[in-house]
Image (cartoon, rainbow, N blue to C red; front, side, top):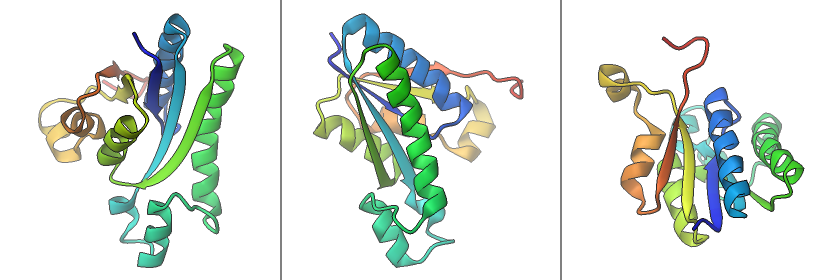
Length: 155
């Protein structure tokens, strides 16, 4: 049923909950796991110059040590967990609008399932904060499994 599962990650607790589900699904179906770290170029455009934003959009984080290390750590966790369970894992780093990058990646790589975390916010909080997960749901025809995360700091 699922041959390729995509799990976008930023290394947060919310993303890690989704990673656990993605790995579990991949083990059950013998699927290849794809992990994707995306730098939201709209969010960083104000603090970086146009040249650096262009490099990020091309997936080139050289010279941006902190950003590169964060991206590598987030996807390396998925790789290590996948390898521990005998799964093939493909990692990719990119820059752009997260929901569009996720939808494009899923289409370009014949992804069968996207697994993403959500804070489970609703109402005004969700409307004010926006939601990459919600936007992804509207941007792709690939099934999306949304993992609701309720951490210690959540109500």
